[in-house]
Image 1 (cartoon, one colour):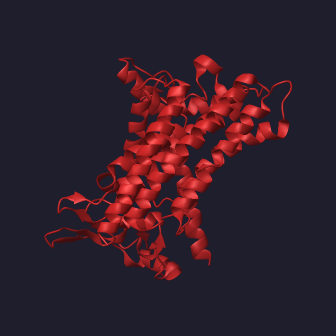
Image 2 (image 1 turned 60 degrees about the vertical axis):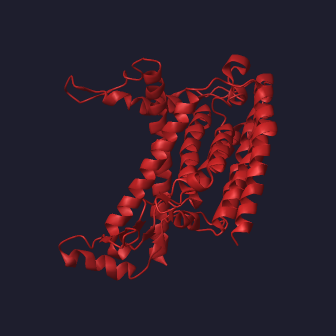
Image 3 (image 1 turned 90 degrees about the horizontal axis):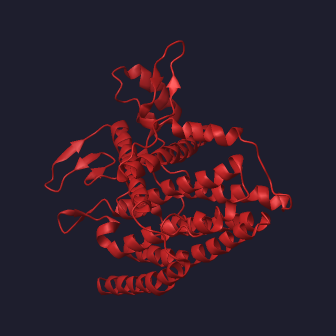
Length: 387
């Protein structure tokens, strides 16, 4: 139906704009947050001048992200003398596109009833055409509603390593190849711990559907705490966060790039927008990891006691809200949580020193993996005792 197609096109457009917009914002947060921690001013030079005036809009350095994108687009594209053309050109897309696809299964809001969006307008004749067009149709605010959303996340996120390996191999550069080998072993090692942490959540929530996991977290634990994953599975939260940062190859796990050893690692021979895609995919992955953290451990788009009809408090009191207001509040809640989770990841990046490579592998195999396995065994045992 045309209505379904229209709504899903809107969802896809919103998801892409959300990821690219926040990724650009996080490039600014990276600079300003590190500057604050180092007692510096940070990005503040790029500006836009109002035409025919001397007024310069600096906006705390927010325009630096736009300047970076323009620079990447306009730079000359240099390529190695000897390289595999097809794999060299394919690698940046294999690194960036899977990151975008993961967001498709993440719910960023509750149930949307398009026909009711204009109910808050004081003139009913303006809302009637929308009701006639959409009728009583309702949509979950999610690009792809899949019963096995967690499996899709694991499957698609594992494709990104192919782009990294191809970039290092096709460049015909020993430093790039070494960076690709490091990235492959690192991402495979930490993905096992991430998978075990996610299985613990599946056992806890009893579902593979990300939307059902969010609904599960809308309850109350011990009469006071929300049933968020961070309270029910605190160890799984730490394991997932650590493994996700390692998967994204950020400090303290940035050994595949490691400028002091490998020039720039697996994308040393890339320039212009091809290099920009690798760098942008890193910040998009911060957004996606933050969205997954919010969905799995921080209640998703929900606030405590918030339902699709408004607030329902434990004492029996209710606060009914119009459907457009509930949808807006849910989307805003999800966005704020994702921004805070992304800023926390950037805080970690500027707080911890880089591991040596042997320390990185030892930490993954001898510390994280046993912890993840023990957490899974304990979760299964507790679940079995409560049956």
